[in-house]
Length: 119
Length: 111
Image 1: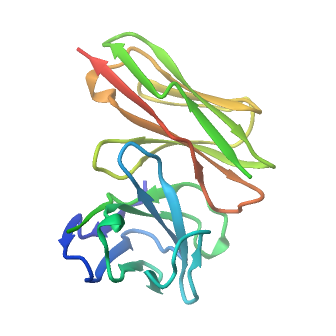
Image 2: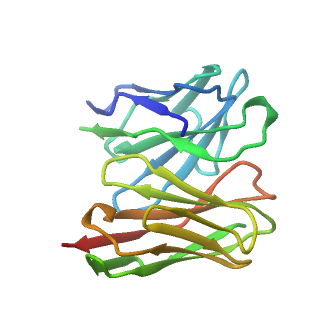
């Protein structure tokens, strides 16, 4: 299957600082990537859709000014949590569907996740 | 709005004791039903995609089936390494490429 990586795997930061998380598709191109967050013992909640070369699409209730998404290339999307607060502590996971520009999305492959802890 | 319900919430099995997990879904038009395995602190690992009723797929001790309203993930003679949370997700015609996830079933297999 396709491989998606994330960096860092975990990060601890102080309240008020910003944190950047990278998501890379290693062996395929991804014009679209997705960002999810997952709280303990809960399922994945889609936060936003990252589109290469255009603005991200945010789900209802997700603050776009707080969660900045940049999809600068066909293999890299970044999520920046700005002015992080303890309630932003969570497990952030990205995914990328195969299918590329043909948009015949089949499977979505997930990264290993990034554990963010805000003190 | 797409809805996905998984049951049971948790399942404790003895090694070798086969069982099934259920995923019920409501969508306007199904473009695909996906099964993932998630280990603690890890991202979901892709298992299967099913596209139409009657379709079945197998991988080692796992077999996924699909009807018009639900999917089953059968675990045959499970081993302790099959312990994980199994997630079901659907992709529908109304949501294009987005996945809607169920809450998951946490399976624990005791030796």
